[in-house]
Length: 370
Image (cartoon, rainbow, N blue to C red):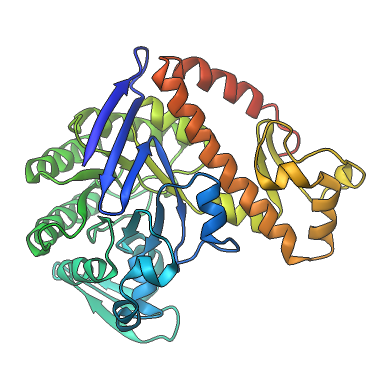
């Protein structure tokens, strides 16, 4: 499934390729998030043209709506959403974790109340695998338990043990050759628990490994330490996925520590809210400074938005509450993240990742408007 092509001589950054039933994708990779079988505000044609090789959808959300019968009758998730490249589906463990007051965890599975209609559902690890196989996912995530930060060590161990038990059951439930199943490393901020969880999951021999339970309130340095620790313990011949890591500086730090895959809603969420990521940092399009600024959003960007529209026009669209504004900004942000990954891969290939990282961060932190 994963081929390590080259490791940067001066860092742990890795250049690789992942092969799936719906094609290959290059790593390090950023997965644009299409939670409800759609990337908000954008057409898949435009996302593909921006360079997306894989997208992420969420099994929990599509299970609730439109439901598995609809997806099955449509011929699977790829046909339903009109995307013929790889799809990774998250199990929904984090979404269920976020429900807090509306779910009950047990060793058997999780009972939760739908955020849509209030109906109660109960899912076992086996159910979650069956759902993702029905979707036709190329990469599957098992049900896991994520804990809040901070938490006690006892709480972290209970969640870790449950995650490991569910991983074992998920692997046993998987139908052969129906997607690649990743193991998810939990253990909160406790080094010994992270090490133990990693070791036990590696012994089960998953197709790849995810670092879960990060970016739930910890400081950046603590997140980086967890990522570095776990990545060092994972097999070199398997892909490594840091779940939910999505700011440019966090991606660079994780790549530096040997991580291959990333996802986050940040590009489109920020785009809808009027914030653009540029080579010089974030800018807020509604600001008066751009009222008569007829230059491109980012002169160094090759996306459709930057090639055709000015900052003044984009500001006008947002202040006039025109839908086109959020579409154009979302498209730019998605392109920006995908282009960042292209540049990262090129730098690793030439053993220049450290120089690229330093140069990018210097320019990016010289923010126009945070």
